[in-house]
Image (tube, rainbow, N blue to C red; front, side):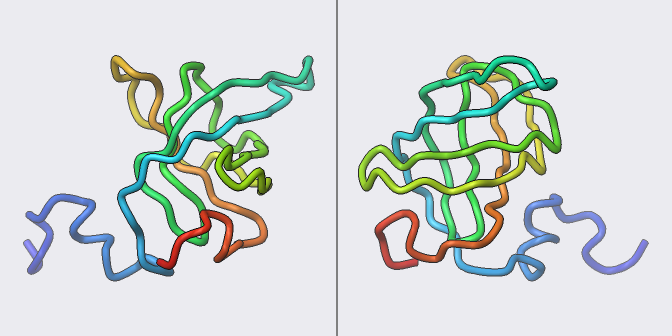
Length: 112
């Protein structure tokens, strides 16, 4: 076994992150089309934010690689992104990793 392989995955990945992250609960709205169906809207919130995306919680399961639009309800700014990671369902909703395209370092209205 190589050094570090026994560490949890999130610790092994820390050096590969593109920017600083901050634990922050921000209310957001999420829009997506699903499988070319009607436009869906959900209210959600974030657990972690950075200029390249966020870990958000959605009451509805959204598929990997789904294009989404996230609106920061505090600033009313919108960002387009893609679901790049999907966790398990928790009591408060689905954990989803969203990557913004393009990155928006000012989207959250806080210094990261």
